[in-house]
Amino acid sequence: MSSHPPMIEVRSLRKEYPVEDDPVVALDHIDLNIAQGEICCIFGPSGSGKSTLLNLLAGLEKPTRGGIRIHGVVINQLNESELALFRQQNTGFIFQSYNLLPALNALENVAMPLMFKGVSKSKREYVAKGLLKMVGLENRMNHYPSQMSGGQQQRVGIARAFVTKPYVIFADEPTGNLDSKSSLEALEMIRTFSRRFNQTVVMVSHSAMAARYADHIVTIEDGRIIKEEFPSKDQPLNLVEI
Ligand code: ADP
Ligand code: MG
Image 1 (tube, protein in one colour):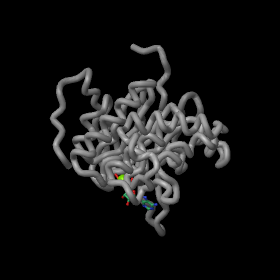
Image 2: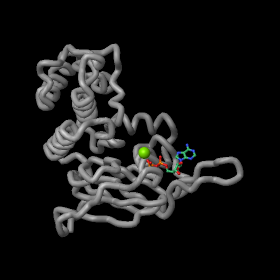
Image 3: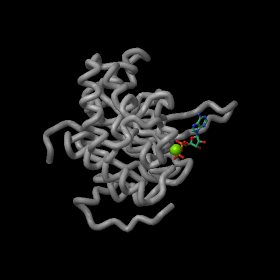
């Protein structure tokens, strides 16, 4: 047993969306611990509540009930500006559709989050170049998003999410727009970065391929956790595509 508290602790979480007079209960009775350095996959079919859970963990939405503690901070008690600062200093985000800034080249996109941390321009470029090399894009540093394939754009997105060395990286369907070869490359890179600095990754996916990269698989259905697995410790997985 580890003596460290979990990096992420979720208690009795519930999220309702007001829809006229019949609110949608997107999540209910969610209790979850995610350890530092763990790659956690929130797995489940479309509409099960995966994105809602990720958005709550990332502080992008407020829970209706329950609590979320990340690295010792109860994020549901922070106000909007405190939350924005917390996200900037502790988290990174990888998007399904990459969300690169089209007017910036690969190097500028990766270096961008360091600007908010007050890092000098020369240091930003040095660090961003190192990450772009690690994702195999040393020959694409000056290319704009429109000049890159989806797989290349997502590698830029991954480098950008890790560039500030955040404690937690959130990813919503990071391979959702990629073919299987690019998906595997993206998942390998996420794992390599995460292992290097013992960073926690919380990834949402409905793909069994992505779940196979996880240390901790949380299966949700109709807004509830129905199964938790720790594949490296348990038996081999037998995940079916859903
Ligand atoms: P998933 O990411 O697993 O596909 P979501 O978290 O997006 O699922 O959605 C879970 C449930 O919550 C769905 O029934 C969805 O329709 C509902 N939902 C999500 N966002 C909203 C919203 N802003 N307003 C109303 N209902 C929503
Ligand atoms: Mg979703």
